[in-house]
Image (cartoon, rainbow, N blue to C red; front, side, top):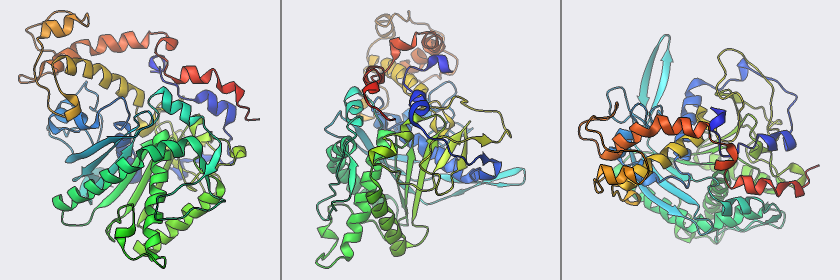
Length: 465
């Protein structure tokens, strides 16, 4: 597993910067199984937001029916994948995908219309349909430009949406705020459109989920803060109606969840206080259960330890979860600034024991990116317009498509796992997947190292001690 890692998992940052809590986590701190399942499902939506993938193509129902099969990238995904009968588990409708002006940071909106929650009753499990969700997801760092902005750690004045005010004591990570501002308007437009589509498709209540991984959590957090403060501003004297708000105003019955996977620190303690004031006001207007803050800190993920507290930063979530060996544990309030914990729980075999930045949702996130990139080589070779999210159209011949990649000639025998009416890229992907996985695992790490390999060489000039 670890031989195939080419992206940086920032374990070295955790060893260098992270602080360890004195409180030992145990089996009693384990998160309820239903919450664990819900968090894992939302991680799937954060994963496919990554800039190396096309959520419009992935969420196309015909493509999902292939991607969810055995030996395909979404085979073990509970929300995006398939049921045992080969049908889609959930009805998920992509509304829009969008990009910011800095490094083309990607985001998308989707309607999760038929998600289910599992309840265990003795040795049996039952499922119940819960409210539809509007998903707003942001990509994490996916290119060198994003990495450079991640290093702009000087705290600067917080700049909110136009109908709200800032305060001289509120500071935010310079690079994160710049990236967020570059994608804020496209995200607002996408959210307006998604709300309209949800209200057209569903006449009852629905909830909003804002999610992201890594840099995407910083963008998601700043978007959420603007959303809550914009609604709160309507109660201020001189604000006449929702028309004065730049952000959309959600229906009064809509509950909001933010799910952050591998979040860095984004704001200073003064803005953390304002954030929790806004959460309290939001719950006062809509009910105690109207807002859920899920922040997941992975074992040995150094991203959650930066920027350091001594730079003037603090985490927004006061009761995050700790992901250790594939299990979630509750971190008690007062321990939330630590990003390393000792866990005394040997109730099950460890999953991803080394931890790191790319193992959220109890999955190898880098492997999904790698497999989707390989798959898209075959898709595009067949003439598919992936950016329209269309089902594969057969264009180039099998021989011309494969010979250009050195894969080999066509075969009249279908690859195991392919079906009679499958597009040619299905067979191409299956025939070379195992070979490529083996080749990737034996490839020297520096050959495939991401942009962080370059940035890591300049990080020693930043003194954290």
